[in-house]
Image 1 (cartoon, rainbow, N blue to C red):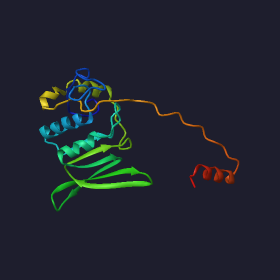
Image 2 (cartoon, rainbow, N blue to C red):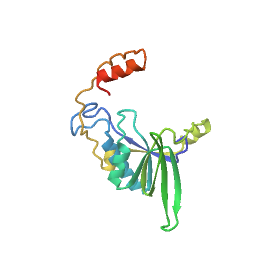
Image 3 (tube, rainbow, N blue to C red):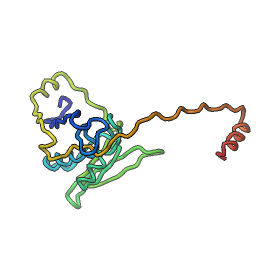
Length: 193
C-alpha cells in the first residue's frame, strides 16, 4: 500500500493445515493455481471490477496458470505476458478496448479485446515504484481487510500431489572439431544431417 494502493484485502490461509507440500487430494495447504483463480474470481465479482492485472507466474511453483484459469472462470478475454498496455475508447459501442503488446521470438505480438479482461504481465511492463518513508507512514492508516477462504466460499483443498522430483541427467560434454569438414562429418555421424 505504500506504493500507491488505497486499500488491500489479505486472505489468510494456514499453509501447514492438512496436506502442506505434496499433500493429497482434498487436503488444504498452500493454494494451487486453481484455488488462487477461484479466490480472485470471487473477489472480482464482489468488488465489481472489469479488469484484473496479474504477474505472469509465481515464484513458488512457477506454473504460469492462475491468470489463464481466472479468465476462464470469469468468461473474460485475456492477454498474457504484457510488455505494453494501452486503453482505447470504442466510440461506436461507448466502451473501452485494451491493446496489449507482448514480446515473442522475432518481434512483438499485439492483441486487442474489449473490457472485461484479464492481463498477465511481463517484467518489461513497468519499473516498480519504491516505497518512500512518507508513503510507508501513510500506508499504516489505510484499510487492510483480513479475510479467510471461508469468507469467500472457496475450497482451498489440494487436487495435485507431488509424486517425484528429480534432477535431470548430467549433460555430456561437447566435442571440438578442427574445421567445417570435420563439423559436417560429425553431424552426419550423429544423424543430424
